[in-house]
Structures are given as C-alpha cells and as structure tokens.
Length: 170
Image (cartoon, rainbow, N blue to C red; front, side):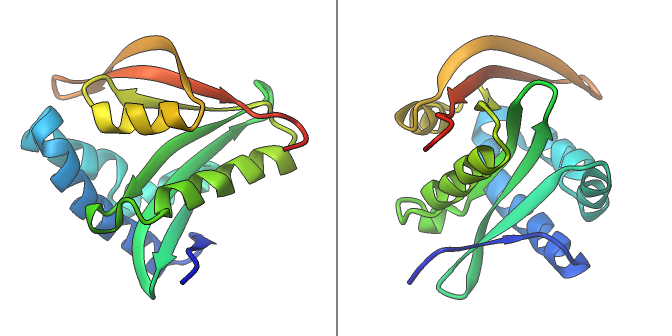
C-alpha cells in the first residue's frame, strides 16, 4: 500500500500531529533527554496551539498515512533568502520504522526543494540521537556545525546542524 503525504490544513490535522508528537517524542526522546524535557518541549513546540501558531507564521506541516493510519509527520520552513528549506521535524512511529515512511516523507521534501528551486535541506538533530544521525547520513546529509540553544526553563538543545545539497534537476 502506498504512503500518502498530506498537508496539515484543518484543526483535526493539527490535533493528529499533536497526538503523534506525544507518542513518538515520549517513546524516542525520553531515553535521550529525559521525561521532564520531553514534556516541556511537547508543550512548547508540539501542542495544538503551538503547531497552529507555527503554521500561522509560515511553517508547513505534513502527515504521513500508511495502511489507513497516521504514522508520522514533518514540519518545514522555507527560507527563500538563504535558498534553503528547514526540515524542522520528521518523526515516524517506531511500529512502522523500516517500512519506507521516513524515506517517503524525505522524498516529498526533496521534491518541494526542486519545485521551489532551493539548493539545500538543513536540519538540527540531537548529538546523542545516533540512529537519526545515521539515517540522515545515509540520505546524503553532512554535519556542518554544532549548535547549543537555550530553550528555557534550564533546558538546552545540543544539536548537530546537518545539510544536504539538492541538485537543481533531480
């Protein structure tokens, strides 16, 4: 069955992203950054209100559907001045990892880059998130910088900045 990628456009879609975020982040990030920081980041960045605000400010969200179930999502922000697109979020339920959902999402993002005539995709990833770092590297991303950002309440994001150049006629 094909993987469907759909733009988030309704309140129900936003609620679905928040539900997926809660499940995926809690399972995946708790061992890396701890439950307290995960809870804080979910409230601050992935609550329905936060997602709605990000979309209002120009962010794009997409849901991934496999076998009639929502199984992942992505968030994008285009920076025309820098000729880049930020893949700010790409998350897939662990129960479907290895079934091509992440690849389908990323292919969709790359296609968006080509259509928008952008030269690269960039992202940040926690420096201790070894599985994700390896996955990005297999897709052609390289580490271009390290960033440590204070996100409030004593929490920091300690990330690699990774980038992939997109050929103009892919």
